[in-house]
Every structure is written in C-alpha cells, then in structure tokens.
Length: 209
Image (tube, rainbow, N blue to C red; front, side, top):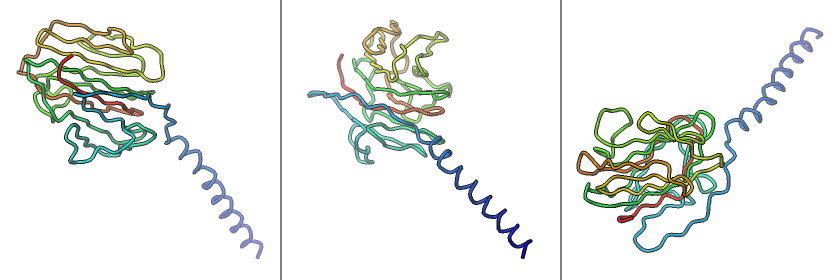
C-alpha cells in the first residue's frame, strides 16, 4: 500500500508540473501585436487592411505560405512557417507605381521586400533579376548598406518607382534613393517573411506616384 501511494504521488507530481508548463509555453508562442494604423485609400488604389483574409480569388493580392495567421488586423507569423504576399499586377519598366505597407518585425525576424522581380515565384538570392530590400527591426539592408528605419514599434514603408529609379521611405522619411531603373522590363512586387515574428498590415498599391 505504501509503495502504491509513493507511485501515485510521483504520477501526480509529474502531471502537475506538465500542466504548469503549458501556459508558459503557450504565452511564449503568442506574439502580442500592436494596434494597426487606421488607413483609407481613394480611387486607383488596391488595398488590404488585413482585418479580413485575402481570398484565393482576390483580384489585387495573392498570399501563399505555411503556418501564417490573420490576427488583430495583421497578417504574419509569430512562430514557425512563412508567408509570401504578391501584387497580382506586375508593373512594366515604363510604368510608375507606388507600394506601401506597415511592418511589425521583432527579434530575429526579417521581411524581404522585392520589386521588378523576374516572376511572382522569385526568391531572395535566387540569382534572378530584381530588387530586394531586407527589413529587420529598426533597419533595412540594401546593396550591402544598412539603413536605420527608426525606433518605433511599427514602421510604414513606401516605395515610389519609375523608369528613372526608385525611392523608399520609412515613416515618411526618405530612406533609399537611386537612379537605377528596372533591368528586366519591370516585374513582380512582393513581400516574403524570413524568420519571426514578422507581421504586415495596410498593404496598398497603385499605378502612378
């Protein structure tokens, strides 16, 4: 009887410890997201606020990936997995266009921002034509140079592109300006997560600057 009680006590102790760990593990995997900015766009803009899921038949944007979520007005991943968002319209090299989005990136997360890409399936460092900017928490990497994007919890990135080059802004401040145009006749525009946590919101695209 004494041996039975000892075994029972050990079982109860193990069960109690395992139950005690669950909330901590769950809390660790849940990213607390900030309130997304409230935005409104007029005629000519394609816009997705991420308060609703982007469907497969959406005319403006397409999302693929694995393990991503829509939550609290954001699209992203706080744990494993990734997302890949593309603009369905591919601007030509003779077209001006503007692309904007809000980003929330923490810890080891990164977000690749690509445009004038060879195709919607293009990936960073795949050797295909196109421009890629790597965004991290408070910084952006382009052409081997690191640019500071400020210390705010979220950042609004805006790209204006034309045959004469492109300019990238972070929260309204000019970040990158070049006179380098597209070298492959224009192409796809996309965002792809790399690591986590990475979340995006207020995606907007239009032709013209």
